[in-house]
Image (cartoon, rainbow, N blue to C red; front, top):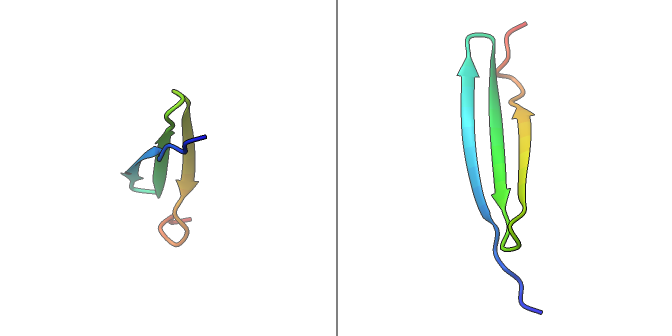
Amino acid sequence: MALCTPVIRTRVAGTPWRSLAYVQEHTGKGITRVGERRMPGRSKH
């Protein structure tokens, strides 16, 4: 069984009150996964 390397794309979206990082992972089997992460220390309360 051969392993395929996934394609990973990242994006950073910023607003005046927070910054978010988005990650997309595209697998060789046609599956796409999306994740979202708030960047600690970048948000103003």
